[in-house]
Image (cartoon, rainbow, N blue to C red; front, top):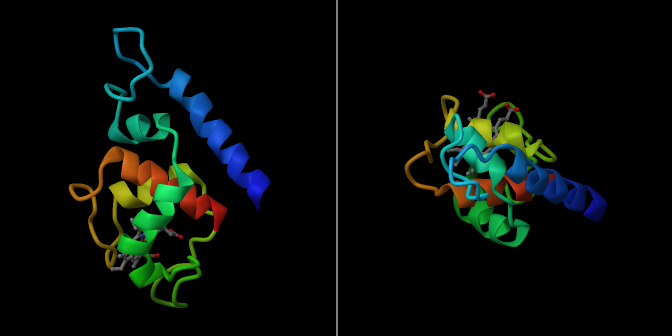
Length: 116
Ligand code: HEC
């Protein structure tokens, strides 16, 4: 489980160099082709992600991400890109957090979900 988390962090960090399309040559994660790219560019912090998940997601998906069969999906181990997609394009029945969570908070929550 710990190895998976490190691999995920490594992948997200690697993405940071690849998706910075700003013209200033630095690696700040803004100005990508989409908000999804900007978020994927960020390195998710699993510690803060656990806090965000507890506050925003666990009411439906439960603290361990296993959900409620038939109502709230089991999202344990979902790839960060897929979690970010779910947050940015919330399904019917899921709270819209697009103007509630920052890009960093989404990256953090997604990193946490990968470790579940
Ligand atoms: C109000 C309840 C609710 C909250 C709060 C909520 N979700 Fe969801 N979530 C849902 C529902 C309902 C679905 C879609 C079920 C379906 O249509 O298959 C969903 C779908 C998802 C999926 C896609 C799962 C799949 O198999 O397609 C992910 C990933 C996800 N949510 C992550 C999160 C994260 C991360 C948060 C917190 C930022 C969150 N959700 C907060 C109810 C919720």
